[in-house]
Image (cartoon, rainbow over all chains, first blue to last red; front, side, top):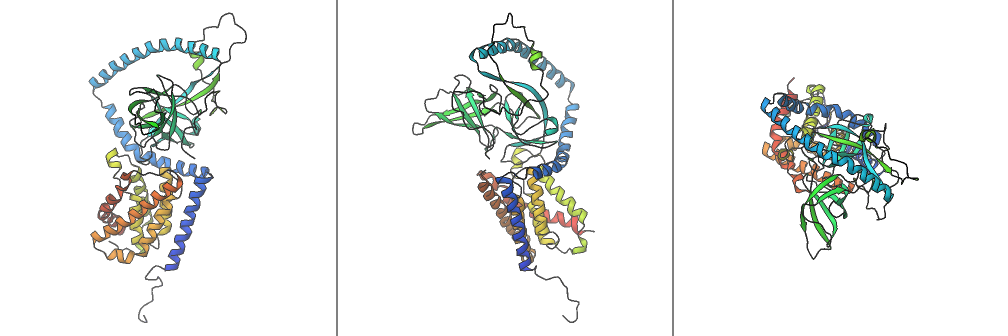
Length: 330
Length: 161
């Protein structure tokens, strides 16, 4: 010892100091977790962290996206032509359907007016691109490239071309997080389209499977039934396809049916989603018979308000007891 | 591998390695590979705790964990807590672990990664969204198997001036 300069650093890391640091840091982490979980005090911090992370997350997936874009642009002529033919055919079919749809919608509005019931129709929609990063393999969530600057709000419904996709759980300024209907923490109120029977579809954590656990044994539901959103809870617009029933297990020992469904939206393959604004339009019965209801063009009805209210403050008038609202558990 | 003194740690490299490990945890992968993705941030934290615990020990683990929470959009602080704990254990036992042959080192890393995952599992359960899927444990042995590669790679990245 006398020969050398003594090294001031301890050979073994100082026990108490290390333990103390562990305790302090662990308490800080625990405090963060409690604050975040219990009272959601950290929304601002969370937004800040997520916004700071977003450019980086975007950069991570940029090469993949560039590769996809490159492959698209070098697609062979024949493939593009084939696709074009298919799209033209699709377009024709859709136009035919739309012709019927307009008349049906008007009829529906009139009937609803007669019954004094409300109807909620999608007023405005916005396309958002999914940022291709893997957030967590066991939580079905995705990141999208639109945020509050585009008018996105928490609890907003997201759809794709085939059905309901999910809802926004966190809306940051430039990016948002969407929980898919297949997330185990998600529940969506549904209705069997054939019979009108209501239930709730829960996510299972697998993108191709929804579970409907609250159907009574005598419920009329068969494989192949279409499930549509019932609109209860006010998060999702009613009447949009959610899934198709793939299995109905009647076990007499159980009080309830075990029903499984497959989501119609391409949850794991979508490159983009549609965020929708819908409005609780209460159609009043006309107070006095007007001479002739002028034919309102569909374009006039579709014109969007600047911004629809986030969610109807009060649930629509319902005679049945409403199920718990969908969405992530608090 | 571990003969790196204070002066040799380049901060730029540390930051680059941290960012790279964060990127590796969110980079898009096919679904079957995604389940096997090792926790690169945990491996990085362990490596730094063994290498330079005074500079990049517990506090580094805490910060990296918080960044990871922000990235994944999970409960803030959960990775911060688990990574601090495994960084503590690794710092505490670092002289022994450094002397171990590679296979034994991987076994220790396996135990530490398991502890990390177990704490996360536990926090998930307490917070009210348990993930009971057994496949969440696949990444732990994969991470331990990656350990020799990680050490070789990081030694090259950091130790050379």
